Amino acid sequence: MINPSSAEYKKNIGPVDLDAERILQLSPRSYTWKNNDKEDFGYIAEEVKEVIPELYRDDGKTKGYDQAKLPFYIIEIIKDQDSQIKQLQMQMARQQTQIELLTTQSESGK
Image 1: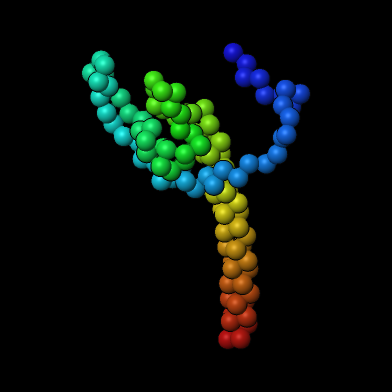
Image 2: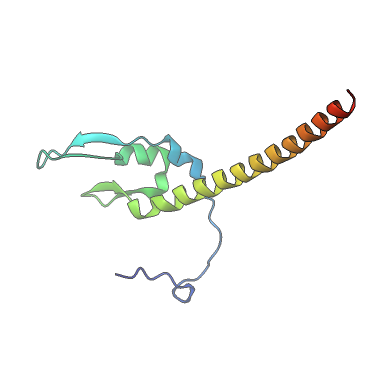
């Protein structure tokens, strides 16, 4: 099944501020379904509602959350972490250069 996603099907396209760090507040839970005693795990809809209310769904019969949107939050966190890693790598490279320079200066001053 193809998820229609082309820009030709959409209007008012713009950036979204997901505040992705919120997903880190969610904790998966283990539970047993009341209707069939099947053990399972996942997020609890009411807990999702507290942390990321825009994902919560209640149609009057069923309470849940939009699982299909969770990857967008995860991808934003990965992108942020990737940026942090690159910044730390550059900082480490600069520090390594400084260490090498100081070592060379120290050795030539002996």
